Image (cartoon, rainbow, N blue to C red):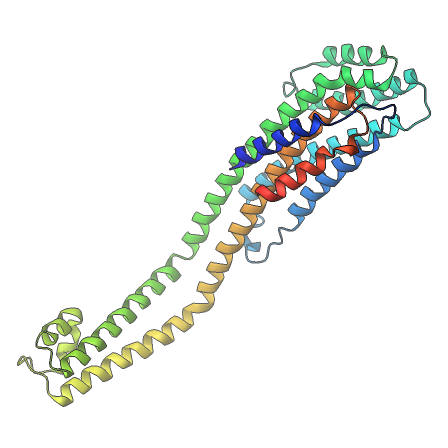
Length: 334
């Protein structure tokens, strides 16, 4: 399903881009505006995960470690937004082309070098590669040329982001299984007692039906009644025939069992309801997190594609809003 969504969005991007017509005006603003919109939509989706019935698990070390993985997703989206805003700011500034390139190089340096030092080996580049890239950016005459020089870095970010999203998705699946197992184990007795009560109620109702059949003269009802509930033989003389008083005593015993089963079930109900609410909340949080991961993955893909278009001088991107196409495709498919 998620692969289909990604394919559908990419198809929208490719077909949409073919309608863009170059003009003399280059508008950087939509590049940042729509990036911010998509990133904010994802963050809002994550903030909707209000935990009520699973609060007792919030400080579980396994869950806390998983929560730290989501910070990687947020860092990627924050970086994408910061980069887009910087490009838009420089594109709208009154600086000369060379000055824009120099400022852009400074920003890229501040953004990337800490990553190379803090997470060596994550990117397919080292500080020497970054120095070469910065020199090439500063060697351009205009911002578009500088963006073109930075495109390999953008592609690399998209590659790393995809790996991060894969890891978070796999861990999310594992966490969901972990919590399902933990919730079930904590409610083993409740589930067992509930199933026993249900079984008791079913036996009682079936016995009452058989008793009614005996009253109507069914010759097989006698044996079937005691096969289903041998304890009822305590109330009869075992002569193969029930008197009116014996039949009444059997029905009274069955009604008493039904009443006790109902009372026991009512006592279990609060714990059983909490168990169901925990299951439902876990399912809702899991499904929402999966949706936000798909959105984040597609957002980075669209952002890197739009950056390439911008670097190639495709102008007035608002005429065919790739980001809007993407959001509509995501909302329709998920």
